[in-house]
Length: 234
Image (cartoon, rainbow, N blue to C red; front, top):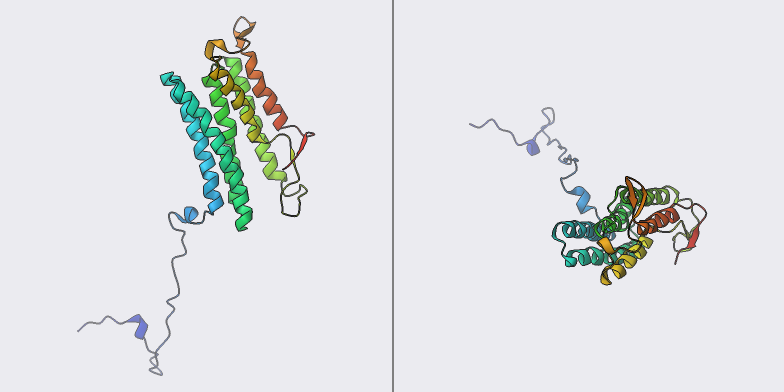
């Protein structure tokens, strides 16, 4: 005869009455994909911004291997699409009233790829490849990092309008780097890239060379981290 007892039918030996058992205990450990399941629609849109950015970087990398102009164009085309997703995610979050700290961090990381790393990669791909060029491109990306970090750290303290939007940008927003992409796109369409970059190459010392065009990246990065430049937010 089986000695197994059903825990749901246990009885008190003194009263022979059924004893209630606690079946409400559940495994509270998070599931493997719990973070993904907690994403809002706006977070998914933000990730699409990051997808566009990394696809742009890959386009620049493919161009370095293939020298196929179509790879260079694809690198440029993905960045405006990233801007579109960057424009949409905030509006969707406000529309659904479900913004989160995670979404804010995702937005900053995606912006860094799409409007920081991708434009710098494009500049390298079109010919800004000397050691000094790469220092300035790195400076540009670091300014983007600092700009986004400052925004995240101070956004709660900045004045906002009735809808909860920040009233102004402190320093130029990092998506303004697409002006650099527009300039490079114009030059590429006119055959002014690689050895034909405007200004050619300047030798500052026997082993120090630089393309003057790379200074537009230095200017863009400096404007991003400006403390006194305030641009009204549309």
